[in-house]
Image (cartoon, rainbow, N blue to C red; front, side):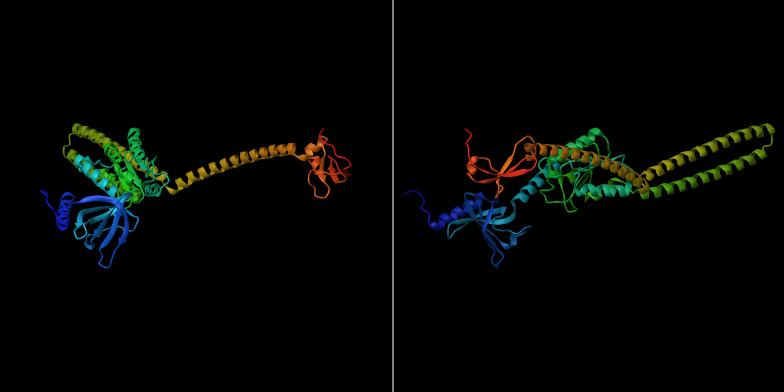
Length: 445
């Protein structure tokens, strides 16, 4: 026999080397069963699917997990293939374990993040500057979620005069990515706002996955309108956060970053008005000093013609100066009045007045709707009454028919088979009734 003859030990050793050389580090997905964690802290279990199973061991030094392994849980493990030579059994030496669903999503997240980063979508040079005072703010989020309520509350508190446009979308589910990308494109087409807030409340990685989709990331990058990402809580990070022009920790923080503080602006306007008045007064004093100096010069150069000519010129300059100052003051006053009117629109009294008008309108509409509904119910009651009268037994009796029942039981007689000669029957007519005795029975023939 020319072939090599292996001992069992040699065969197992060679097989182990072959497995170790071919499967250096692999990912395997399966269901945990036969889980055992002895006092040593090491973890022993079987990983199985519908058709096969393999033994696994995970030493205590490698047990860095964010979840508790349990029988029946689907996991993905990173492991080396090893052969236990004394028994000839092979097993997996697990280095890392994660839940199957989250693990797959996390890998997809990392792959897309690397891809978009290599394409330059995260570069600071692509970030657009946010407007200091937006003409209108667009909000892309669920219309029924807590995020939109938080955003509107913050915007009303900070600068209620800025219009807010809601672009309602699903923020979770299969169609969420399509709706979000479409809403961004729609906002850019309509050009109704000059900043966009992309927001939703917190959740798991799977809940927030719509904001990790490549379609959404590219829509944000293509947007000509600056986009602020306010997705989840402070600890949540999405692909949208990296692509957006500004990442806010929460939806409320995103709202705060778009609208200035109206109280602070009002204080600034008042300060600017004061400084402007001081500046104008200083200019007037300087000009008056200059006029006084020129008057002194004129007194020194006494010739009447020159004096008259210079006095005329001086009066013209003074008139022009006063006009310019008055014109500047009028312009400044108009600016202040405009800003004051704008702030009045967002004042509590103005808001209460609009709410009262809305309440009056709704009350009148409720009364009108209730009246129409009652008329409809009355008509239905009348129709039902007429229908009931048509099918009533009394209507049948009015047409000349009689209702015959057994005298004792009150059972309705429908056939002669229910009667015998001598039975007492009660016959009911339209008006009154009488008792009769059956003397003879006849069939239909």
